[in-house]
Length: 105
Length: 381
Ligand code: HEM
Image (cartoon, rainbow over all chains, first blue to last red; front, side, top):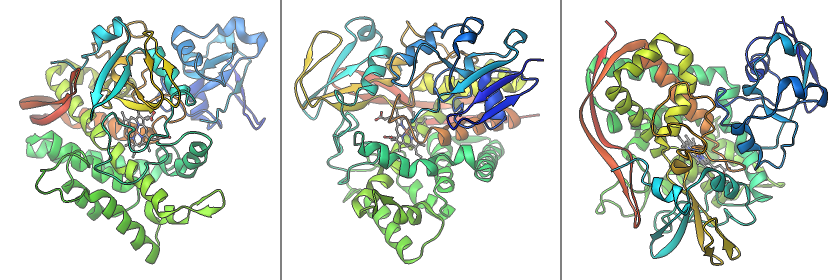
């Protein structure tokens, strides 16, 4: 079963074993600071913004058109930005590390 | 008549001009244009009291609404003051349970009555009672607000409007809370400090004003919209009952589909070029048309249909960027609880009579919610 690590803006490290569901669901279930998931995971509220380290980007994949449409107007977003609700945990992502963006808004 | 009178403009120039009280407002109709304007507060400013909605509210209120009618850096600090109050749905399980119980009791009563008018008979009291819980005031206050009607500024006979009741009411509540402080919204605001000094009376009135006005007809129109839709599409209620995991995405989809707030304005401090090549002169307003952006075919497939499990659903019914809706967690909690209770208790909804509510403007007429919606509910057998 895959394992995922969230690094919060305060540099707290939270590792979840046997992670199932989307990164947003996993983070909110485990009270990871800075991930809210207000819209329930439909890519609307952008409160599950994470950054993907370079070494994971290929496996995780790039932002979808729906995500990019939001990131285009977020000063905080960069090329490493994804929304956690759009990333489903899977075996291939075992060991994944993501940074919680923790935007101001 | 249509919920989306913007299709032609959206696919055409992308801008629809409307006139309110003789002043021009250029409405942006496309998703990316609306998002861009919502983010760019230097070009599109929120420092425009009392004109944040497309019709000036100069006649119905004297205060600047906060934190909505200001720009950063003031906005950032004002918003941070009240954010924790509005975040209760995420942080306070007791409050969440209270709302769920309230909604469930009201749905149970509705099933018991069997026939009911939804707008004033259900959605308005539900909205008021839920707000009483958010603000931690007794239910008896909600009874006062219910008297004000569906829209706190406009739902009244000309004859009875000496003066709008809202400011006098909230002013009195702040004074009472001063004498007798408690755990409620008004007492809390009395204690808040903005950059080291207490909030002024006008500032407190400004926070209270949008709290009462902003979440009222929006929530009510969404609720009546959901009832009407479920009545016309009986299979939808059955689908939700069979798969409760649809409730979260369905709420977002109903909020997108209804888009109960038609437009929010911004003021251009400088002459500004619009996407259609025209120019807004210095001091004039534009507006962001949320329902139009939410049906932009370059973002949503089958935008005119309710797709219960629509994912992704990057709608902007609650706004976009710094001013995005503070009341969204509360609104979502009410709507999620409503769908849950309807699934638990109701088998079928039939419409007996409906009168759509029309927003008639100089260049468009939009259907938004209902004036009247009489339904019959068949309970779970
Ligand atoms: C379905 C229901 C609702 C919808 C569609 C809605 C929509 C919106 C939108 C589009 C904005 C952005 C305004 C802007 O950009 O200037 C907004 C802001 C706001 N809303 Fe809501 N709203 C809803 C319910 C509520 C409720 C229930 C409350 C209060 C209890 C509320 C309080 C506010 C406040 C205080 C702001 C200003 C936030 C700021 O300026 O930072 N809203 N709303």
